[in-house]
Every structure is written in C-alpha cells, then in structure tokens.
Image (tube, rainbow, N blue to C red):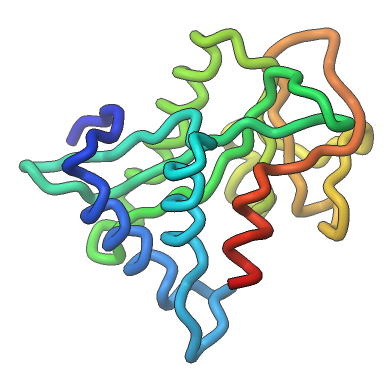
Length: 172
C-alpha cells in the first residue's frame, strides 16, 4: 500500500470509498445518505480541498483523507481541518486510516501549517497528538470532541470555523 495525492481519475472511486465507509458508521442516521462524500465533492468544487490523499493497494483506492483550511477568529492563520478520513469497510482495522492521518500531518508540516483541528473521538485521535484545547473553540461542538494539534508556536487561540462546505452539505 502507498499513499499519494488524489488525481482527477480517482474522484468517482474516492466518492464510493467515502460513501461505503460512512454508510454504517455509528454516527450515521439510518435511512439517510452519508454527508461525507458530498462534503468532499463540495470542497473540491469550491477550491476548498487543500490536501487530498488516497491510500492505494494493488491498484485500488482503499482509503482517503481530506484537509481544508480553517479560520481562527475569521482570519486565515495557517490552520487546517482534518476530515473526513475514510477507509473502505473491507479494509478497516488495518492501520490504513492511521497511515493517511500520519502522512497528512507530515505533508502539512512540510507546507508550514500552524496546526490541524478536527471534530472526532478523542480516544482515537489522541494517539496522533490531538487534544481538546480550551483556547480553541468550535461553536456548537462539545469541547471534548473538538480536538487540535498545534504544529507551530506560539500556539493560536480563538474561535475556529471550518469551510462553509461543512454547513452546506448538512443543509441539502
């Protein structure tokens, strides 16, 4: 398996992998379509997809991770949002998601990113260095699920807002 940047010919397969990964996710509402594939498509179409990596194994895409720029107190600050990260159900629990996250963190570090934020399970994301930070907040998200990984110091603080695509895909 290797990880690489997405290419235009990957877009349909990425959509399928994300859809399959989130269809039976514990946070998914049964009887509805997952929002995550639409989110990635909106980010891509709007130019908001800052980093998009795929995990490929034997010529097949088995995982995907997306990063988009976030604002702190309404300003561009060199921070990125992680999500979604998806691994095809047939390949979950094989460290593919971890490899995508680690590769994405490394790529953003190389770009000079100041930090990465996400909404997710602290028990999973703490292994990558993400923690709840009382100096960073995301409106309407319980603080224990809003996690950050500062990559530069001094550390930023303030109210974080994700790309508008996150709201748009929930409203359609």
